[in-house]
Image 1: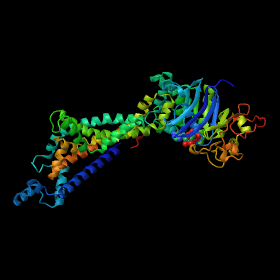
Image 2: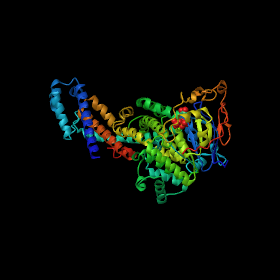
Image 3: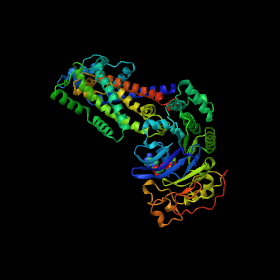
Image 4: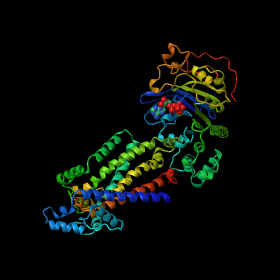
Length: 306
Length: 327
Ligand SMILES: Nc1ncnc2c1ncn2[C@@H]1O[C@H](COP(=O)(O)OP(=O)(O)OP(=O)(O)O)[C@@H](O)[C@H]1O
Ligand SMILES: [Mg+2]
């Protein structure tokens, strides 16, 4: 177990280091923050001063070492745009994002899992076909298209709900639905195939042969086994709680982390982008770790195997 | 003949429009041990899965399965659940995958005890432990808390048997219970089945590839081919005077009764698949004595005396039977 933990930690650290490096390379090679933030018409001396202030005048690999070293010391740097600590900028946006992604996550679970189970239990029935058609639509329609359609219908045409902004719980409804439907579709498909796989197993036949009523076969024998692969997908969804709403936040002008990320990338505001990426990688790694622990709980065959 | 416990009448099963069973008739008397033999794919498992309503929904089933005169095929699900595991239990070929991997084996036995005997808590656990002792699982108390993957194949099959005994069934259907196990364990499991049958007085249906195994345990044998029972007789009769050319071929292929057991493969050709069954007798293409009449229609089973019946146009009534009982 200890070895397993250590291995996981090393892997997590490597993942995060890679993410950090990748962001540095992409952001620093794709544009000059000084020019973008100061605007191209700014006087040359001003741009040079900005460069010097932020260390942009040094060779790129020195910048990289400085930047990496700072991260190792827990310093995430300041926003080049307004000089505030990047971490503060990000943290103040997180509640708004969670206000979308948490209810959307609940929606995915409450809609996707039961729909997938029902579809599997009534394979090839009308229910199954409807659920699967809905699921495919849910995750193939891009979220900005779905979001715009919902706005068109419920905000513009019917006038029931606001079309954007963060103004009371009613303005959260459309973005939450937009976010939730796609995930619910993915989860429904996954749950269905996991259930179908399990329902074809011999131990299901054994349970029926010993007289267990079908409902109890499903509840006590099929679901606990089908939960094992489904947990992986749910883990991914937990991992995207922070950064999963970039598109939807833009469509609905929701002042969350996603919008902050877009602005920061546009400005090549490295510290802020970095801070968001670190947070995203952190949640992903934690979620993965939780999934692994959960596997051990759900599947006795994996206990002790590590 | 004595009363029948289970009577299968004209059982047909098709998958995707292809008949896998074509009119199976079989009677099981209380307490009797009946063997069902035949090559892979001839419909042995499907017969009993269909009888107990355990086939996937895509299987189209017709015919009757009478238990004390009551047709299992027309029962409501709840009534059928009260019979499965309680009056008729079934164990399967692959014990490891037949047990639920995420539940402890004891819990799976207790589940049957709760359903069929109303036992709960400590009483159920004590009874599960007694059953484990009965089927010869060493260190029963600790094994109750094991998972299937922690036990050997033979032990898993013993767990399956304990689970089947939990409902004190009148009939146990054992579908190739030893095929997945190695030879010494096979013999142990077969001995266990023989002992349990004698002790509990339950009837036993033993499905097997192996005529030798069946001859050891069963007083009557049905030989299946192409989704039908082609010959059925008391074990001694079948061995002494087989009538169906297929049975004759099987017996000719059988090694010395005391020699090593092997699969039935000595007849040239293979079992036809349900989607290309010949129109008439499904054995005709492999049969030395087949004539054009054999291809015309399915031969009906004919009684040739002494509880011996055979479905073959060319079956001649055998010589008076010498009573040779295989050891
Ligand atoms: N679920 C299923 N779907 C489609 N065909 C099936 C199914 N189950 C059985 N069959 C077909 O029915 C026929 C009889 O199968 P069955 O399992 O009864 O054979 P068996 O005599 O038990 O053979 P074995 O000794 O290999 O267990 C086979 O041809 C098989 O392909
Ligand atoms: Mg079989």
